[in-house]
Image (cartoon, rainbow, N blue to C red):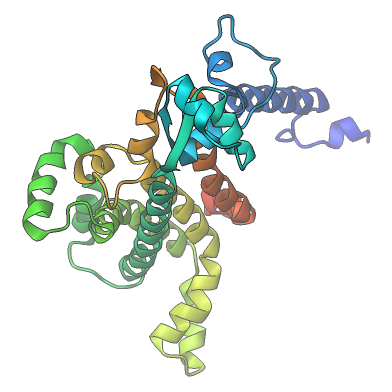
Length: 316
């Protein structure tokens, strides 16, 4: 019997595989164009960034990154002539535009706020979601379906619908413009997603594993820690990525509830002002740096991500 006749009808043909690979590569290239363009804009000078037609070939410059991390002031030519020679390359770069550096910008502070709030809320959401999902999966909870629907319904409303009540509540409790307030808010929003995702993963773990552990003398907590969690790590990784993406990119609550101490990077990047308007290289540089933690976190968990997303899709 020939190889062609023994091939499964579910297996794609070689030409079908090549066509699918071509579509995937084409889609990846198209989706990468905006990211590559943002990265290139961060390496342009302000005139090159707004040039028309857009410049694809240009002399790279770190002016955007210098403008992102520094505060500058325009001075008269007479004042610039009276200054001593520049002591650093970035000082020389700024002086070419008749400006002087007056101090650091607040981008680094806003960036650190995003890291604290984003990763802090993600950890709490996954931690609480794992415990709640385990309870819904393994125990007889009264009105379980109604409670799960209620938990999911908290994500059905747009953030702006509850922004004003949350603003008033936070102002009364003293949580406005605080790291704790933003971590609690993002945690509560992400817990519903974490519960629903993780419950599906834990449902796929046979209860016989835990029963065997309990027979061997493990407590319920030990069985959960040593048996269930290792089996659910793929789902936990996928859930953590989704929760972090929401907390990292969230804009509406961060704009309304923060203004100084706890403001994150998303509301800060669009208002970077340069000479005569938005400093597009600085905005692009900030956006590029803002993308890096998500990329690194996703790459770090990439081995678990695909398995976590497709876990339980096929039953043997």
